[in-house]
Image (cartoon, rainbow, N blue to C red; front, side, top):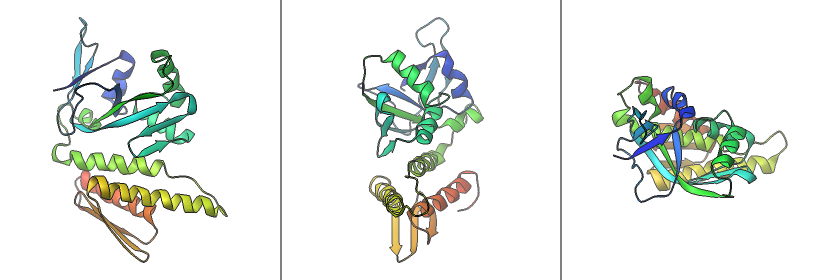
Amino acid sequence: MVAYSFKARFIPKIEDGSKRHTIRADRARHARAGEPVQLYEGMRTRTCRLIGAPQCLLVGPIRIFVHLDRIECGPWTYRTAGELDLFAERDGFEDWADMCDFWMDEHPSTAVFSGQIIFWDHEYFAQPGVSTGGDGDLFRLIDVVTTGLVTLPSWGPGDYEGLRAYHRAGNAILDQLAHSEGAKISRRGDAWTLAMAGVRASSTGGAATLLRNWRAGAQKRFAGGAA
């Protein structure tokens, strides 16, 4: 079982479930999806304590460009202030500025950081010792889809190029899900369907609406309802 140690400032964020992942340098062995991961405070010190051992949901490559306000996390890229703040909050910071301050203190000579991001089942901390179990993959996919939706480019009235970029990005998310997650996608005119992890959704409003509908159904299934 792989273990990670955390500074005291991150412990409350881990315990309340707002910190969902950790970013680490490459090494011979990181946690693997589906296995428990041990989270410690002050590992290898006299005050060392186990925070918890939630299930690892996903491990993937990440690159952080602090000075360029950009994060590349697997197939997703974070560029806007809202996207970067959301990512930073899920990593245990107040916002992107707070994360940048920490990062430059810890890695002052690193212009581009390359490593791995490790996601765990943060719902574990809602009921200590209880994880999502068999629904861990569904939970992971909900987070993957949510991350993709957050990164969709914005557009406004009359911005037809922005609208085209929005639809292209949504289609790219669907293609990525089909390629890496085994999602089944059907496009018949305006009627689109998405089936993934036992949840099926449909839409006549394009890729983004289809993804939102799938997420709503997955969240209902995760909470114990039918979808």
